[in-house]
Amino acid sequence: MVAAALSATAADDTAVRLSRAADVFTKITETGHGIPPEQIAGADCVAVIPGFKKGAAVVGVGYGRGFISCRNGGGWSAPGAITLETGSLGVQLGGEAMDIVILSTDKERRSKLLSDRFAIGTDASAAWGNGKSAHQDPNAKILFFGQTKGAFAGFGLDGATLKRDESGDKALYGKALTNNEIVDDGAQTPSIAQAFVATLGRATGR
Image (cartoon, rainbow, N blue to C red; front, side, top):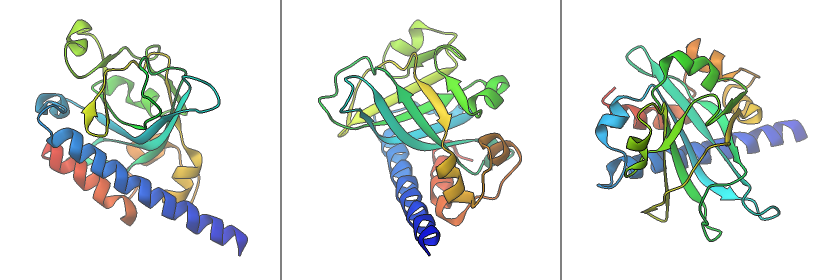
């Protein structure tokens, strides 16, 4: 009974986070100062981390949970659960949560991006997608965007790490699938994740 209750709670938490992730992506792509259409069109994978927060115990440390999906044939794959951990965002957020969207254009490194641990800035170069930062590093394969209460903020993710969220994947799929298995092996999109995947499709026309 206890295990079933915990499983139901995890599923509810995951459903809420998926809904928030869909809302975040919609807002960031629809605003006039958001992600340019050409950058969305060129993305192979999209990660959305709603409500990323700096840790209260250690100044600068940040943590957030979200989801990643990649292009799969004519659409977008079922989402894998991820966490984003970083020692510093490069800006002071005044304690506010930040919604973060990460685009990857590196198809050849997709498997690494979906692995249990992907170090941004080490495994792939990264650049802030808004403003001039993206153009200062033309070789950047990772672009990232963030906003707090509708205002876009510049920040850095070098040294941040994307990790597989095993508990999130179990809540979604009922078993311990890896994100590579979910995305590249064509796992069926759970009903609670269909709205999130549909949101990606509307923004990219696929």
